[in-house]
Length: 483
Image (cartoon, rainbow, N blue to C red):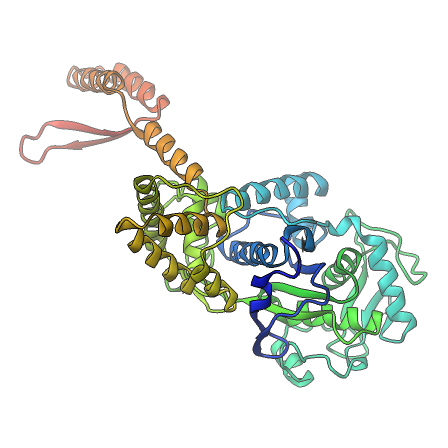
C-alpha cells in the first residue's frame, strides 16, 4: 500500500495533549511516519496498568501501517535498564544488573506478546545510548540551558520560557504539586538532573562536562537521546500514560527543544487514561495489584488462568483517553465474546485474510481518535448481520477481529488445551478415591502412620484434601480437588 492511500486522505483524528484539541493528523513526511512510546523500566513484572499503553499504541501502530503502508511507519518503544529501582532489586536479590534486566525484558516480551501486541520496529535500551545522552547534555551546557554543580549536571528550568505548556502548569504550580528534590546546589527548585554521580556498586560511565567522577544519566534525558537517534530531532507522535505528562514528558520537551533549537520535539502528544481495578486505585496495600504474568499464569484469588486475548479485549473496551475500570467481570465477558466470535465465524465458514484490513465502519471508529468502543459497536453490528446469513459481514468481522490484534486460532487452541489439562480421567479419579478410602480405613484403625503416608502420596500428586466431620452421622469424611 502506498503512502498516499485513499484511507489516509480521509483523515485520522487524534487528541493532542499539547494543544488540548482533537485534530487531523498530518505527518511530517507521509513516506516516513514516526512514533515513540515510553516503554518499561525493567526491574519487575509489568502490571495491567503498564499493559494499557502497550495495547493502545499497538492498535495505533497497526492503524498507521494500514493508512500509510508498513514500510512507511517506524514505531519505537524504549527500555529503561538503568534506574534506582533496578539497582535496589539487583542488590536485594544478589544478582547482577545485566542479569536482572535481561530476564525482566524477556518476561516483558512474553507477557506483551500474550496480549497480542506486536513488537515495535526498534526497541532501544538506555545503556546502549549513553554516548548520545552525554553529547546532548554537553550541548545543553554549552547553550546555557544546563549547568554543572557538585558533580551533577542539571537542566535550568527558568531558561525555557515555554516550560509547563504540555502539562498546562505554571512554575509555582509545578513546585507545589511535585516532589521537588531539595539540593543546595540547585539554581532553582524546579531544576532537574541530567547526570549524577554513581555510588559504590552502582553502574557508572565516564561523565560528561569534564566531571572526574563516574556517573549515570537521569531518567528524562534517556528518552530525548534515544528518540533523536532513531526518529530525528522532530517526529510525529509521542505516546505514554497520563502519569508521564509531568514531569517526564515535560522534561523531555525542554531537553530536546533546547538542545536542537526546534519548535517541537513531537508534533502530537498522546496520553492514555489511568487504570483502576474493581473501582479502586490499584495498589499492593489494597490487595488488587495484578501483574500481567500473574493473570496469565494464575490469578491467586480465583485460582484460574486468564487468556491474554481476554485481557486485550478488556483493555480496549474503553476509549484510550478515558480512565478504565479493569474488572474480572470484563475478563470473563471478553472470553465469552471471543468464543461467540469463533462459533459465528465457523458457522459462516470464514477466516481472516492474510493482510486483514478492518471493515469500513470499524475503520471509521478507529480514525476517530482511536474510538475502540465505536469500533467494537460496528463489529457487534457485523456479528448480528452474520447471524442472519450475511457472509460478507462475517468476512468483514473476521478481518476486523484480526486487525485489532485478536488471534482466534491460538485462543481456541489454548482453551482446548486448558480444558484437557483440567479433565480427570476415570482411571485417575478411581485411583484417588481408592487411596482416600484406604486412608479413612487407616484412621479408623488408628494407624496414623499409614494415614499420613497416604496423605503425603496424594499431596505429592497435587491433590488438595479437606477433612471434616459429617454433622449428621458423626463420621469422618474427606473431600478432594484435582490440581
